Length: 405
Image (cartoon, rainbow, N blue to C red; front, side, top):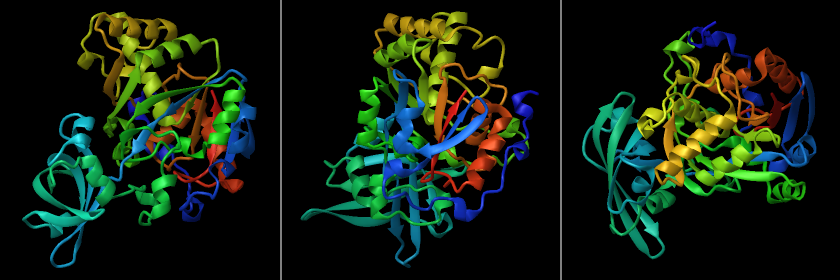
């Protein structure tokens, strides 16, 4: 079957609302851990994660940091308007570091109530105050272009969001963000601002667990992929071919790619989270493109939704692909690679860069569940049935799994 013909109805399951974890556990590494290996399922807790991997394994983490992207305003009538900042015009860092003014693509809650005129809000910053305005420029599809202006103009938009914004909790939690979410809806190793959703597979790790992994000679490597709101976008079409996959930006160093190249085939490589896996597979496919057509531009290298399923792309070794990518970067004097990926990993796709995937339990009828099915085949049904039958907690604040391919 062509991946485009996959029926999303074949990748669903019954998820009762009471199985969705509305809040995190008191201790991150107290989450349950389902281990799937060679068709067998067992369970443990995350603080014993190190017992289930090779002594010299390589773990790949996504160190993106969630920004407080939901900004609330009130109309003179008292009606609430919520602006969910998705992405700035231009580069992400430019949008976050902008001073005085910035234009962002937003989702708008209560848009029908916002007839005209700017929204206004005053923010306290110590003894000082920041005056914030939001002006609706235009609607583009389901999104809105919104211009933010603020004084004093010396303040960055990142600072404005810190004062005005709320943690963008997933919509399926059906609750407003609370103070605890500022810490807990963030990995302990988060470094680079840009995500509007957490890479939730990483929420289980503590400093104690990371120390224990290092003592075991496990290599912890870090990439950055900024998670977009599209990760929660439901598949509304009957077949995947009619679903447009969201694009997300990743940022990796040449040093990271070299570490991945050195580790492949020599160490057990484990992607922590679907975002890490998506980035690794995108790097492999970009290198594969270069083996077919050396000298491509960065734009031509970018991975679109169906690239991996067309022609001979990906029918090479991971080593050769990563070497080609590093050579391409070196020829251009690049020490970092920043690019979007629209890669859809679904049944029919063969994962090549990792030996295992650590991930949470995902929504029914979602592209993330398709990714899990691509990793473990039809056994995804047994894995999810076991989790439901054995009191595992689901979705972002829920328990996790370690799936060996």
